[in-house]
Every structure is written in C-alpha cells, then in structure tokens.
Image (cartoon, rainbow, N blue to C red; front, side, top):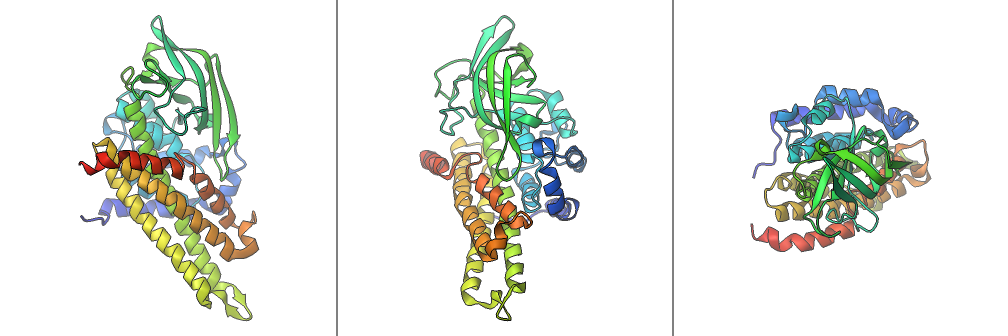
Length: 380
C-alpha cells in the first residue's frame, strides 16, 4: 500500500505548518491563554478562510469532504504550533457527528464559515468513558422533548453556541440502542453550565439539564439511533487528537535535539555525550512509531466495519498515550530545570501531552476496547 501523500495533501501540510510556525507561535499561545475560553475569534475565522473548519464536513453541507488523513495533517501542524483554538472538539467531532446524522445542514454551514462553534456533550458521571452509557433522559412531551440529566467534561462547551447532547429516549442506561441526539441552545431555561480551564489550555464544562424543553426539530438524526454516529465521530476525533499529540511530540524532539547541540558542559556540547544521544534516539523512535500509528488509524477509521475502526483507533490512542508521556518526560529531563519554567514552551507541551493521556479515553479504556473488538476486526 502506498502511504505517500498526494500533491494536494503535501500542499495542505505545508500551509498548515507555515501557519503554525509563523502565524501562531509561543507568544500568541501565551496571549490566547489570557482570552475567555482560550480561543481567539480572529484565528477561528482564519481557519475558516483556509477551509480547515469545512474540511471534515460533508460536501452537501458546504464542507470539503476531506479524509481523516487530511484532517490529521492539519492537526499535526496545530499540535506542533501549540494552537489553542478548539479545532478537534469544536469542529472535527461535532462536524463528523452532524454529517453522519445528515442533520442540521444550516448549523454545519455556519460551522464551515466560522460563524459558530459547537460542542458535543456525551460523557457522564459513572460512564467509565463509554459513550454507550447514557443516563440523561429525553422524554417525549407534546411535539418536543424534555431533557434531564448531567454531562461532564464537555470540551469547548464555554465557547459553543450550540450543544449536541446525547440523551436516552429508550432502553436502559448501558444500552447502545435508545440514544438520541439533540441540538440544544446553552442559554436554554433549566440548563446550567459550569466552565473550567483544562491543563495545557482550552476549556470544558460540566452541564446540568433540569427539565430542558426542546422542539422536535432539535433532534439530530433518527430517534434512538444516536450511538452509532456518536461512536464513529468520537473515533474520528480521537485520531485527530492523536495527530495533534504527534505534532507536539515532534516539536519536543526538535527542541530537545537543538538544546543538546548548543548547551555546553565543561566546554563541550552535551549532545556529544553518548548516554544523552541514546535517549534522543529513543525519543525519535517513539515519534516515528507514533506517526505510523496515526497514519494507520487515519486509514482504518474510515472502515465500514465498526470493529475494525474501533480496534485501529484504540490501538493508536493506547500507543500514543504511552509514547507521548515518554517523549514529554524525556524532553523535560534533558532540558533540566529550565524545562518546567513558564518562559520555555517545553513545559507547556508537557502539560498538553499530559492532558492528552485521558482525552477521548484513557490508555486503560482503549486497551479494553481493543481487546473487545479484536475478534470482530480479525473476521474482516
């Protein structure tokens, strides 16, 4: 199989890398940390102008219908550039979800144009990271529904003008069937949102829904059939997050290599010490193996077989969850005390990669999920 990038993908990668290196940078990262929601509206609009917000969206909704690998190229560059704008949680995840449901085309169009931000509320207390668990209820009420329940760690919720909420309209709390999806205004009566910053940048919120009334038109997709699209969209977001982590790992490798070249001890660059060279090589190996996992999962996430998709995505997330931790720790240790100062970006990359470990499922969750889906993948 040929894994080389097409000419269009090379152009996409180069433009994204140029934006992250020259149009963003550590100074803008630090200034964005002072903004509400850790998001610069100017940067979000610029992403829309580049076509990045529309890249993961279907063409019939005003998007570009890009592949998961196309999106990964953008995310890798954003990760290397420490870009804080919520591309994965605010565009990739909700964009794929709405596209798979073939619902809310107007909302997708506004997302592609950069006129809105979205957030997906699916995780709940007691869910153990499983999107099939849903205790939030959606009770039919006249020509609409009444929503009640709690959601936790809803990424990008403080910036979102619309929340995509999973709620159970049938079945038990752990049943994959019976979950419906709803587009909900965060200003709705009965909806309480408690925002908080995340380690490494970005915002999330815990949400309480108390007798929140929504119309029938707010339902996204078919009733009781929301789990399949949600599960697939989360896998696409996981691959994108892995690509973003790969970008951060690559940046740390490059910065550490340069530091070892210029830092001297007893008049000699410490990069000449064989023990430190070995550690740098170990970092390089982890980065390149992670790159292979991102490419593999970017291909397999498009599979029509859920077990194949889940197995590949969980393998990538579990591997990068471990390798990103190793690379981040080595970078900090090889930089010494300066590696954890606020003035150097190394420590900020470390925080972002530490947060990545639990983003869209921990290593332990994905190892269990990999094992559960191994038989199904092998039957393809």
